[in-house]
Length: 518
Image (cartoon, rainbow, N blue to C red):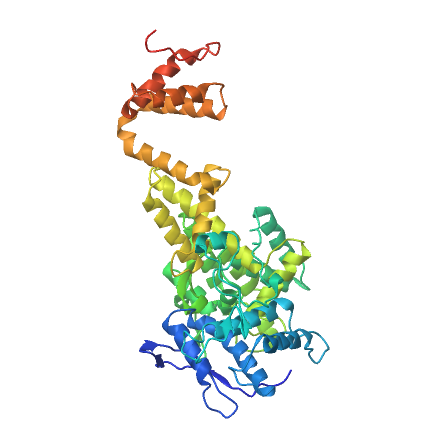
């Protein structure tokens, strides 16, 4: 692959665009070393109008730099392009080979690159980059007409409401979501991770990595960034202060990962964790730096923390560091070949291989989705019961907020709502989430009228539910007639239904409505 002449940097702290902080904004240089103004204005406009977060501009910047380099190599100005030029670049990427004779990019990655380049031209007029719009249904860069439907409907059917490149590969976008693995599938994946590596130490490491995703909800980048210092800080919040149980080692204290097998301080830490469990503590909250440098405290189950310490940090990880004769890095998960921090790419590949080996659809992200479903179910059950089984907005909001926090979302997102709604469906054993609104209204009615209802009423309501569930012939017709009869006002409906049920104590009784004039 050819080295690109267009250098790329990212704006330092204090850099501002249009009066707003723009640290990290991509700055791409032209071949003469000057800033490439069209790209700077595009990214500056994107920052001002929040098209995407600055952190999401980085991959776009590398694609646009590559596009700029291609234009320079064929002697084209950035605003002298059409469908033919874009098509030629797409085909060039599809056929490009590396030094080993393998394709550099797959069709999906090429399609994503073309989408980024199209977006640049599609937004050029809005960003006041060009004098005229290069994108239209008639060209030079042809586009499809946007669909005039709501965003909600578009998401439901996997459609796009924005303009798209008319020549885009139609199969490049997949709206099919991978299923979230259930308990059984996750157990299979974790068992494979713990048994398939070259040695026991690697097996334990891989198993702990998988559980960091399934039990703690970490992304691959967060697993890679997990540190010994973060574990020490989490333990300290529970009163297990490691520094108080360490001796000086040169000019620094002994760290958590340096306690050897003869050190009684290991026993102290494990016993303290077991005591927390006996006192019904469930988690140690570990500080994590997540997506977009957002910080949160991720819940690490106490059992997982003990397994992580005893089965990996105090065993094969220490052996690896001793073999390399070096000071231990702060990263928890290390490469067995270099004893340095394991990268997020390596972690992602490890998970993909495990799913593929067991013929289960998914990746490490699906383990995180499994965590999302699990913790949503747990919080919903806990808050619903704590609210006296009254289903109100407070219970929903508390669940949504806690799930968002556990997953590292800055606000309640569509994904978080999906996890919580799925938890409700599972809790109430509903056929689907479409039944949730009606069930919510019934719950609110119980909450509103609970002072007027006694045990007799609840028994009768239970009888109604049982008969309707059993589809007793004619029963719903009786209820419909009673509720529709003007002689029975809505506030008296419960008494009317109770009266109708009285003669039904005998199973041989024939259901009939007695005319009012009889």
